[in-house]
Length: 156
Image 1 (cartoon, rainbow, N blue to C red):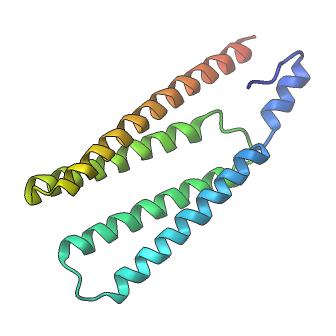
Image 2 (spheres, one colour):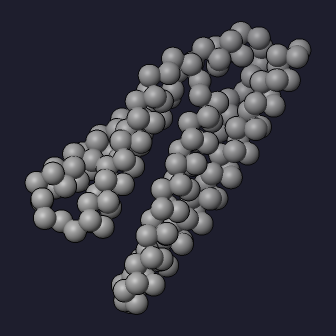
């Protein structure tokens, strides 16, 4: 829900605002969950020395994904100005990228193993990818809308 803008002071107040409490709590939760997941996976990866190469690669990719989400959360929390949906576009792009990696891995597993579970993972990955693409497209649309508003306000 977009607040009503009635005056130039309202515009300045909105431009100077920080993230809402809800957004900050969401990013704190993202930071905690992604860091926790990364620590658990990394500790398992480092303590299990006889993992097959494909498992080590998967753990490395999962750790990279976790660090990426934590980095996004830190970036968003450290901003002292409105993000104008830029954070949503970045998060949507990350979701599409990471879900695509999952779908590619599930497809490879399904082709190699020809296991019903692998096909189930592929199907759920395809659903998640469709959702990620929808979120990304919506975020891009919102960002374009806000950028257009800002340009119109700056033009006078």
